[in-house]
Length: 147
Image 1 (cartoon, one colour):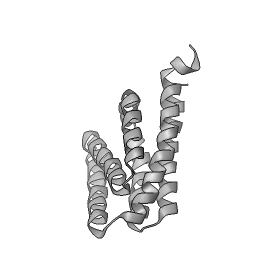
Image 2: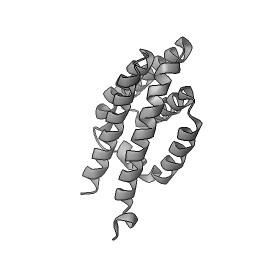
Image 3: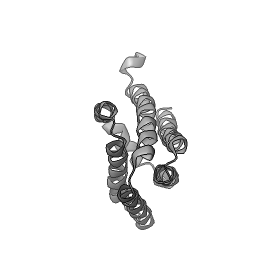
Image 4: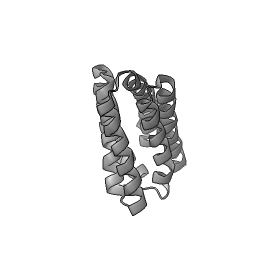
């Protein structure tokens, strides 16, 4: 199968592009976030931790979607937001599969908490790096699942 037709390779490419765009959004969000928005992210972090402790993957996944949406919203980057939305739509099957991998939430939760922490501390470099590391971890999981 040619590389362009291989769904896992396509998803990997999408994830790598998303990583760059979402790192930009995390950087910008950390520069723009208000105290009210920071509180919303902190509450979301608590909800994510609670969902993991209950073993509630559906709630955790919903919180994850809200986290990314909030960071993108706060970043005020409409071009990046539109591009990310299109890319997500093309990789939804793989996202669902990754969310179902045993142990994946325990890997991704600390990464997401690091993003929230950096954004709320107004740390642009830390926020971008934390987001980059999360999406790199997703890319690694895609690589491992397609071996």
